[in-house]
Length: 383
Image (cartoon, rainbow, N blue to C red):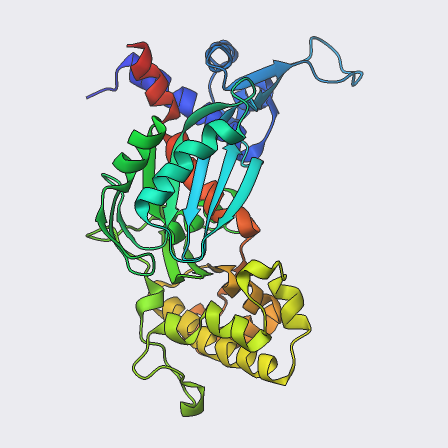
């Protein structure tokens, strides 16, 4: 059955907005080439997006060209999504624009893991206290949670490091902040963000691992599509049993990967803490003997874990975020070689990369949750 005209128009609006969000400002002529739509259709779509406050148009600078210049279309700066990443020692909040830049970012430290109610209250207070209502238009809230999340209804099934279980977080935060709210696993969002905007833009098959205070999570992109699994929990590499070749490398009896390759162990060996403002890369570069031994130990175990993932999934690219990126950056070529040495011959060209979005990767991914339904939401609001 053919799609209705309104449905096709909504799809085209979303496609144009997505192109501008991913690739930056473009002229109408460039949008015609990128979409295959005709000039009049692009003009009408841009006009509608402009009326919705999602894009702006301007004339290009003088270039000496012949004929009427094609207007340049840019995403507007006022619409923002509130991205929230709760961790065991802090809650990070940001207002993220459509172009993935951050209008404001704040890390609120906690002496203990925050409760879901505390996070909801913090979000509800932070939005009006931090954002200028005249300059920012809040589209919604996206939360990147380190745990198992049922994204269909925003329920946190189990976030053991935070102590949350079966919590209707999307409803809780939405009720407190009075804005549409969405929740997903933090590593899943990191994988999507790096695939769409970061180190995996040129790849369709990706294994992503994210390391943070709450452990190691992961995400899978296969054929350009996120793999969620039967219950939506695919990619939990941190709970795999690591292959540890040298018995002396083991620190946790019968432990999983995130017990062995752990941010807390790394910080302890380096003599720094997450909240003291120390740059992890600088701390690694200045590491003493015990710190260097721990770095080498974690890299050995990580290389084997990545090789196992590569042997199963056959990705083109493995992307590492959080403290895993810092571990890789010590010697990225060396880690890649160690991974390839443990993979099957047919997939030994797998490439290991660090997350291009850096510390913003989870926030950018969380912001995409409310942004994804933006066009359909506007159409529905109009009736």
